[in-house]
Image (cartoon, rainbow, N blue to C red; front, side):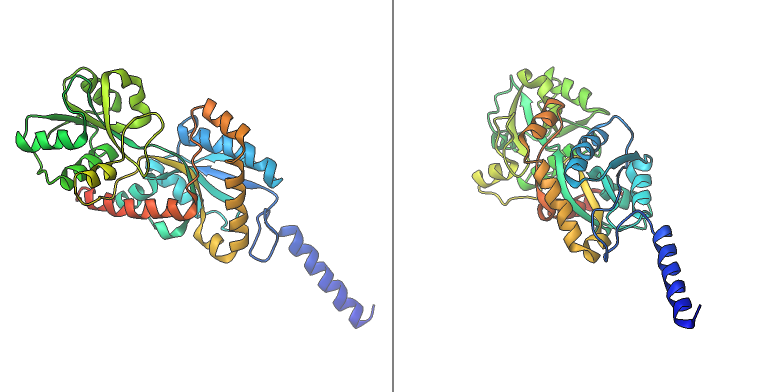
Length: 331
């Protein structure tokens, strides 16, 4: 064999070996999607985040034409799963399909995490919990403004139930600040579960509760909705948004804290290195949430179907991080 033939054979062998050992994922220089995609759920099996991820994986793999598997990596309030995801290839073969808020933010604040919000490229928050301000139906308060005025007129006489360190507790504090109330103007009673806090308002032990709107549907006949901590009114509750209430009362609007947001995120480095592939994933996700049959199947399982998109999802998570940081207890 002459020199040129030996050089050609060596080059061909090198290419063959490189192809044999190449990972299944995609890189910035190769086509996307890869041969397999994995959704990482940073919480346990069977929960709301897990159910959302599995339903999404089953549907999206049809459109993308590649299998999507789901793995659970629970522990540390999501921190174990977040760390696992960050250590996986950032080539678009792994996505975090979990409760992307407030778990990531809380983990960053609670642990010495080696990741930050900037390391995640948030795609969408599909299933969102929003807090509801609701009074016992037998109270005379027809609006949140009227309730807050009564609390200001007679400090400490009205009671509110919340779960400690919950989004509801923080949203109540934000609302009180916006209305110019001081700590103690409302007698805040804490309960260790949302069920207990709801029972308290339904039974009249407290006047007001601030809890997840979906969960409060179970006591709808016993309460009167006054406001929701959301961007827009909710279909199940006849109540304005908190900021609409503030505007009606001539007050400045306030950032509100979103509840649990189940959705999808990629590595920020994947988005930055391969923006076209990232956009393909965004479009695929958006497309399946526009499929009426798929949406109906999710709604039948009580799974959310909201599309916020990358920009709005990121905006909420980043602004909420600042709220959480402010209320994060000092070590």
